[in-house]
Length: 190
Image 1: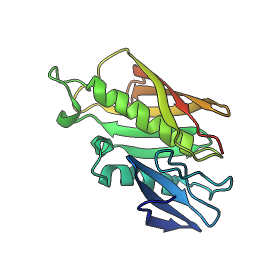
Image 2 (image 1 turned 90 degrees about the vertical axis):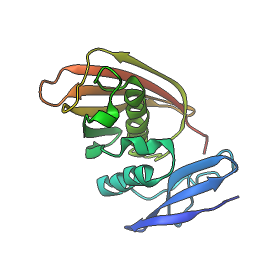
Image 3 (image 1 turned 180 degrees about the horizontal axis):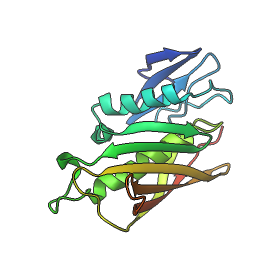
Image 4 (image 1 turned 180 degrees about the vertical axis):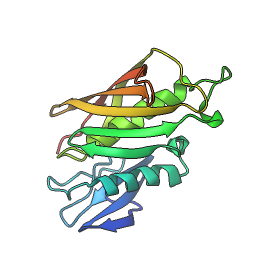
């Protein structure tokens, strides 16, 4: 059952859509073959989906920022590149991203790990975001206001039910590791 499906982008035979209903809001790629999973509403993804491009991935990220949900905190995030299972983004740390100490907030770091690793999962054959079951972050050093950071997410493994990703946040100028996250996601069966 598809509740509140709306197409927001059309490109190369695919549309970016939003599924809403039964407590679920999920951005998916829509094609003639089917739509993405939304367990709360009972929607299941068809086995064949359209190819995701870097430009459409940028549109997915823009849709997150334009949504009324929490993910809009990544509004300064820019997708630099994407290859199979790997996405690289950048962001300049601004005052709105910091804690009382004037450094990158740990909660925003966790959100970056979540959002960018999910983007890396979308950039695989499955093109499914999955559902978080575990995420942990090790904080190595601080990023201050004005620092430019790179967020590199790589899918380590995708099995039938679980996917594993690693995310590094590094200083763009020095290459120093700021934080490293590991994200495990449940991948709904097709």
